[in-house]
Length: 262
Length: 311
Image 1: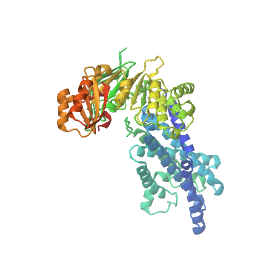
Image 2: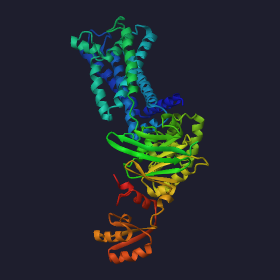
Image 3: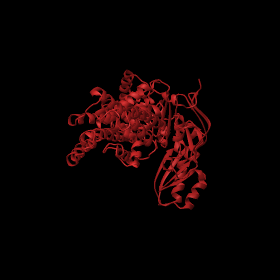
Image 4: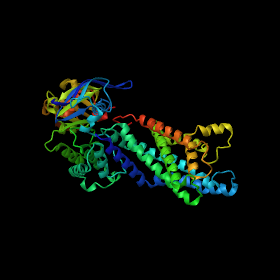
């Protein structure tokens, strides 16, 4: 039995569910945009940061806010796993002739798609209000940004799936995601440059997956030379490896299938 | 081709240290409605989960359509779970479309079969309503539509009419049993003895993971005393119950909260003796012919417990 139709149907169903759930659709983008507007403008006006590549703090925050949007989106999308488990839908899906992996693949594909769209919308909403330099040209810059957003969301979807299949409650899942991912956001260059940090913080930044995404987005949008903190080649090598590895881990950790659904 | 769709021989299964099935042996004839009856925890749902290839037996031989249960076999099986397995945010039509796609159906086939099943189960005009807006009975009927959409050869039903009112239940079974001349086999796991008596061709009484008796309802009732007397009685004393047991045999008397149930050969001879034994204490008497419930209590040696009332 072809899995393509099943994956397509599962993908469509989860996309439709998010589109219908307006709060989920907008909330992933709303908080990051608030950061961008209020924190960015406030810090830019009050502190006039001189050594930011982007020229002002609002423009500087865009890369981090795009990463933050992806984190929020992955967290919200994984809530559908818990909703399906609690409504009994997951049991129904898993009692079909398809493997649990096929079911999860269809669902996570929808999560990746939603995350990519939301992060891209945030980037596009910010573009008219900040001065992007697009040092590889507009098309080149958008391609780099788009590829970064896709890889980031694939990785986050895998991570969220791996956690969701093992953490019992949705509340616990959100707690783990926040505890694990927010510190990573802080030490990724999302909110402040990591170039001149104390050595221990710089180590944190270098072992942080988000640092590579922020670096690639900054390289795409700003004109500060092509070296960046790591450089595009390293950014994409690390993000590519993490996306493949973590997504595979997420699919490998399939939920245990039981008649009772517990 | 085998006469039996399901063949289980000496099946054992454990949940950790807890033994759920302990040597279960039974065969389910193709085209029949087979009831699995037993108290909660007797292994009914566990056995169904083995058939749906959700678990594997620890030991024993199990075959469905002549093969060991596997994921691919689920294409020939429809399942209705004890609890709803519906997304409240989807409509009935969307639910069936998703189910059809999971079972490899084309869009045209899904549309055709959805219309047919929704019509059979009286939901044609509710297809585009959200599941959240449907009543409990309608949701169960939608579950049936979903389970039957791909026209499965074997239908696994786990307490399918729980929470369904009598009218809905009757309509549901009418649609289920109208197999259009086909030979679908139905396996029903239930606590509802009256329902099983009405719809099942064969029945197995399960207890502690074993089949204690298997046969047609008529076969299982054979040898039972003919009439069941239900007596609403103010505080029968142990001595009075012992006296009745001496008349009928100890295993024919079941005392429950406020009532006593006695199976006898001849109620017309028994009732006057009863009034003589407990003058003024008896509030009402109902006399019934032997039912599957009588057979159940005979085979499942748990006095005073109905299947729904046990842990």
